Length: 141
Image 1: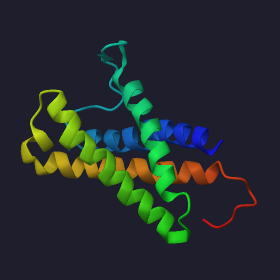
Image 2: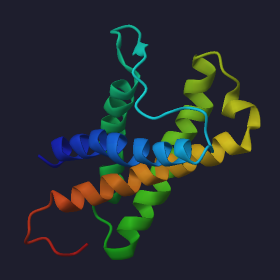
Image 3: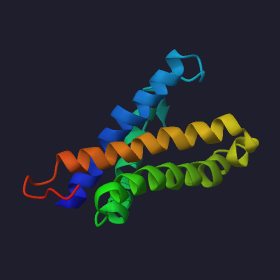
Image 4: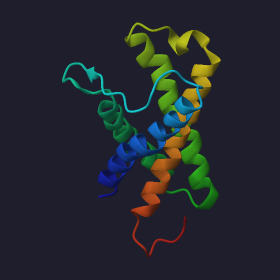
C-alpha cells in the first residue's frame, strides 16, 4: 500500500511543489517557461505536465524506498538531497541527450541549479505528502 501512496505522492508533488516553484520562478522572471505545460507529448499525446507528473510518481516510488527508514532530520535531508540529485542527474545526463539536447544543457549553470532546486522541492513535497498519508500511530517523523 505504501507504494501506491508513494506513486500518488510523487505525482501530486510534481503538480504542487515542482510546478509551484517553477511558477514562482516564472513570475519572478527567472525562467522563460511557464508551469503546467499542456503541449502534447508523443507517443500518446498527453499534456507535458501530466507526463512529468507520471514520471514524478515513478520517482516517488524510488525516493520512498530510500527515505522510508530515515528518522527525524535525516528523513527531510534525504528527501531534499536525493530528490534534487537523482531526477536532475537523469534528466540532464540521459533525457536531454536522448531528446537531442546538449548534455547537462551544455553546462548552463542556471539550468543545472534550477533543476536541483525544482527537484529538491519535489523531493520535500513527496516526504511531506508521505508524512500526511501515514497512520496516526506513526509519530517518528
